[in-house]
Length: 140
Image (cartoon, rainbow, N blue to C red):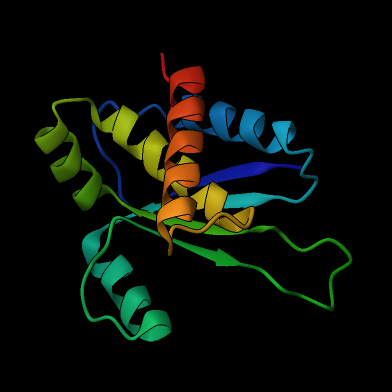
């Protein structure tokens, strides 16, 4: 199992090593042996992905894509794309750090890769509780 954080875009003071450690711990808790790739990017890139894969022509904060690869014996679990533009705006609105917001979005994206969904009230409540649990555990 591995976690790779790829910085396509950057933000001053962003602690990618801490983000990587938190995702490692989360995957370990679920005994996941596959890799996760977390791509930190911008609104333009995320908007393009959202348009291409979800037919939604707008930026969003986080997108997760499961990897299904029959060629490789152990493909990555998936990729998580985080818009640092959205993260910065949402952090400002919520009154907390960009590091906390990026961690929250990475946890949210990882939970999607693990099968959690928020398309019902029960699913939303379960996923939100898990996000808060892990955010509290991993954010310092």
